[in-house]
Image 1 (spheres, rainbow, N blue to C red):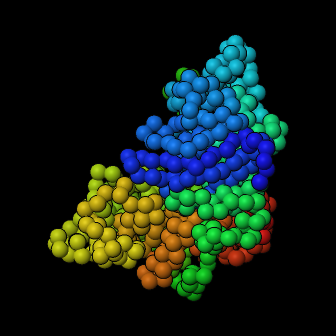
Image 2: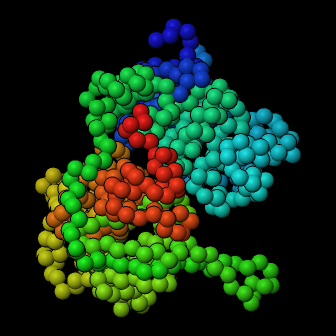
Image 3: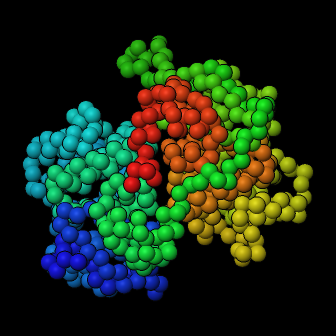
Length: 536
């Protein structure tokens, strides 16, 4: 370790909330121009460590030292910290929609930083903001300057966040899960952009992530946290190729595996079948012509697909490719054209007529916390479908079915005190996704639509949920429609793969063929954009 003063040095840092210690004696240093990745599962203390550097933890008690170029940030006044935040140390947050002000255009927000931190005149700040948007890869930056956050895609919002963070030319950038919500190709693009900007400006970067694939492509050094303790740190190659701590080895071994996937039944009759499936959305026509004319945007063009019992069809493609429109059409949530058959039936668009089919087609969403009502107990959440679709069941029968289903997804009542009366916030992300699975499974569906079911989870929880899905399919012979941008998840789960680009099916076939010998250039570009084990 170098004896020269580090750009940032954290010494014996303890972080306590209401008497509970969440970070225990952390020691870490970042050199000027270095790229350090801080990795670990949710609850390991990564994010609170980064927030403590900027003193953004209002309710926490901090002890130890956070030395910024030899100056202890924990001893600075709030006025002194205001000058450091954004100007010398900047931060990119995980979810740009919550970090950006929805009432200001993205250009105004970047310009505001320049006016406050660099004392630029408003006109000069606006011009520099446009330049920063362009440098971070946003096309037509002049027009995007006047756009509000909701008018940008996820990738564009994250680029705008990056432009705002870089506006004051900081010497250290704290990037907290900056690519979690993005498609695989966008994640790698954002990481490459961050690396290019880091080289250009010479700033240091602390990347906080649980995505080890991205760490391989970015970091110089890696530090691993477990339950508030720093358990291992070192050069990227040393930690990844020769991990010394069991927890590091556990993280590295958590890559999704196809081992538990059973072969799809041969000659099984398709439960879901579409022919020429098309989804269109109405578009506003500007001016008085909008009173007389109607225009439509076609999000999905004539998709043909089929899924049999016990089989999984994986759908891949970037944002805007039509994946979500396909899923919503299959779930009967939006109007569609063409043919769509679910066990010989189709959606009528009338709730009373569609009710029997809703029992056979269920969905598991991306964010288990957002998809579960915080006002309902686990028992109420899981039993809701039974009460709707099987109203003849008694309370005892409902409770027995709910407990049996929760046990099937790995939440056994004997291991969780008062399980049915607890609320979602009392469970981890992986456990919440198990509750979401139980809610869908309790009505015994024939098709599960899995919309990015593991993208919000840590690597170990992701592997556990995928293994559970494999077991459930084997035992229940369900069909899965799997929507994901994670190629590893497709490799672990899919029997067939369908590739969408701009609403068009550009390739489909057996998973092994599509994922190892792709025929279409777009499929090849998606696979090349996703980091693999061989690309360490």
